Length: 143
Image 1 (tube, one colour):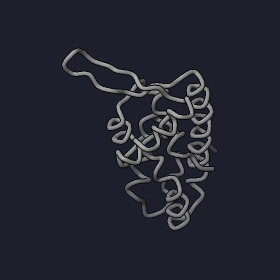
Image 2 (image 1 turned 30 degrees about the vertical axis):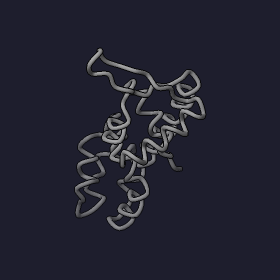
Image 3 (image 1 turned 135 degrees about the vertical axis):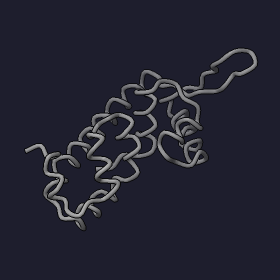
Image 4 (image 1 turned 60 degrees about the horizontal axis):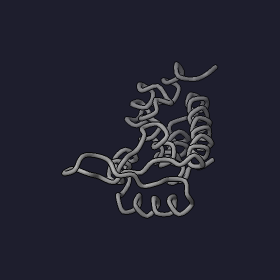
């Protein structure tokens, strides 16, 4: 199961509210130009809208969800929860090599998973920092 950049953006806007493209790129650990391109597509699809925020001198353009975008963000959030649950349930049964291969496919999602606290922080530190064996992390399994 994969989560596209547009789904990640929708989830982030759902959770954090209106954000500038630079903020979105920062939160997701992505290139700002990549995020700006995706925001254009989301806007064309009427999933997000541009909003001006701030005062007279310091106005900035932020992006917010439309009602349709909110619905899509909820679906994407459920997908992310399923991915997080899969990671949590499988992590203790893998050896180090299997774990590394498994987690590599989800590494781009780790910033968003961390922001939303979908996995225990201690487990994320263990995963991102490595471990001598996956068995050491059996306390994080859902058994």
